[in-house]
Image: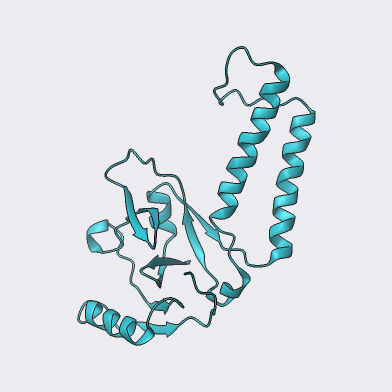
Length: 185
C-alpha cells in the first residue's frame, strides 16, 4: 500500500501498512468526491440522530452528575458529532487534489506524549504532527519511490533539494510536480 507523507509542501509516497499498525494508526484512503462525502456524513448523522431518539447515552463521556437524561442524550449526540467531523477531516480532501490518489495514516497521539507529539508552524498556524522513522533504524525500512511536489513549492528548488538529500542514499526516485492548482495562502 502507498501513502503520502507531506513535509514542506512535498509529498512522498511510501509502503506503509506495517508501519501504521506498529504505531497504532489506521490507513485511510482520501476521499475527493463531494457526493460520496455527503453520503458518508449523512449516514453518520442519521445514526447519531437515531441513537439520540432511542435515548442512547455514552457512559464514557464525563458529564455533570446533576444533568437530566435529556441533557445527557444531547451531550452524547454533540460529542459523537464532533468526533465524526474530526474523523472526516483527516481524509476528506478538495476534489482538485484527486490526481494524488492519497492515502493517510490516521490516529491519535496525545499532546502530552513528548516523544511522539511534535509541533510546527505554517504561516500563522501551529500544526501538530508525529514523526515516524521510515529508515533502517525504525525497524522497517520503507524506500521512498516517488515524490510529488505540491503547488505551494518552487518545483525546481524542490527537485534540487530532493536530489541533494537523497544522493547516494536512495536508488532512483521519481520526482513529479502536482497538477493541482489549489494553493494555500
